[in-house]
Length: 70
Length: 512
Image (cartoon, rainbow over all chains, first blue to last red; front, side):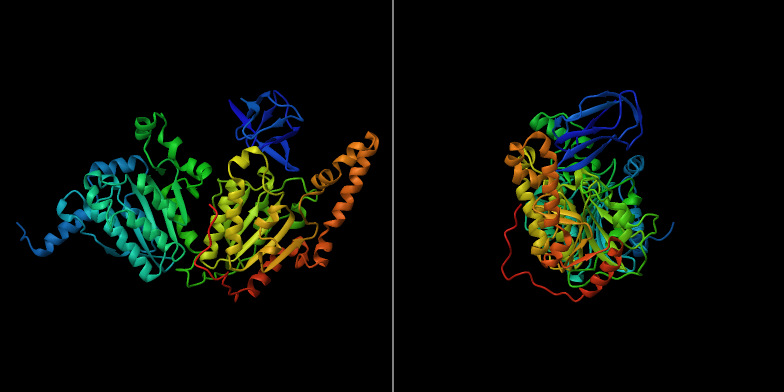
């Protein structure tokens, strides 16, 4: 199990996956908005999205958990 | 029985020295996937060591061949370089009196010859039993670091880390221009895990505390993570090809090559939407000679890319924001990374190309606590002081102090070019309209807000339009994205004779 974390502080702009979905390594799973930029967040490991921890619009800090991959 | 002659005695002693330490330490080396020091030197040089000094250091001790370090001169791509290389089969590569003296002497030799110096480090640190002889005195280990500082910027100093670099010894990599670390074996630490447990009560393993991957991605003490010793050595041979032998010379010009060819042109890979991300490596590949990119600190602060390349055969240093990582925003670590790279290029006459696509420096409590202002100041300081040709390209945008750090017009680049569609401003349209009209927007009826905001943003975009900036002579040229390579070729050639002293003084007071 791995946790995908936020690379920087910002707002969750788009969640690109749903729970139960199969994802590949390096796939973009969430897009944050920070400093007026879209910040794509990728998963380092492949697997199934087990749990989405944040919701679109949430403010998150650097290293906050975004979702869980199994 | 053969007669025991002076000749045979010499051969016997020499053979003993060249074999290194006891067989069991060679076996241990093997198990760890490490090469013997003399094998490493075979790989590093075109044709092995051509001159070795102090071969018989401590020969009478019996078990300390070459006193645990090989020093000498060899050739890389036909160019003379000096080397010091620890032998981990001799008392774990630890330093005694003669080890230190040999290292100091090869530093002195490299200075006199004006040639690069390679440090092949694999050492447990000081021999505690010999400390009075090798630690505190005028020609003790401290002198090695003093010399490194003195040589810094005079000759290239390259560190290859194959094993530990412990305690005081960890400062050898710290004072080198670049540090290549072999994953799994290389480590750097002031106190070992055992010491950490005894002294501060921390339980930690070596890899977590001071391993190659940690240093190359988190601390920034390492620059290049290599999978094997062969890969590390091959990187070092390549790296030095971008450099002159010393600060008095310019880098060699190699055979020019065209960039690799791609289906999509530069124009097609840069998104029109300022907020969308793209991969800056795709742009770099399209403007440099094919396969000429030699990156430094790839895994550390990846929101900025730093690396050597060739354009029309000429060595250049590229500093580029990476929108794909953290939006290309500058952080404390990215500023730090760029500062050292800029200073390295400037020291050895390697022209700088800034590819700016930067929303600014990061804001917020966390980065203020990390001292983002003083780290940012380091980058701006190094960039200002650099007197090599500086070419600034505004790829898409340069907002706020990001424009300054990326060698904006006020910092005397030889040219500041914008690609069509680029924006330069204190902040982007979204943030600016918010900042200026926040009260007015709030006072408007809800249904009118969106239209008002869009109208103001449009006005703002006109205000910061690239031709407006060119018309005011703020930027020197606007070019089509697909003409970037050609422009860089012509400009680099034109600026070849640039000669500039930054200012007159003893030295600046560097923000650290």
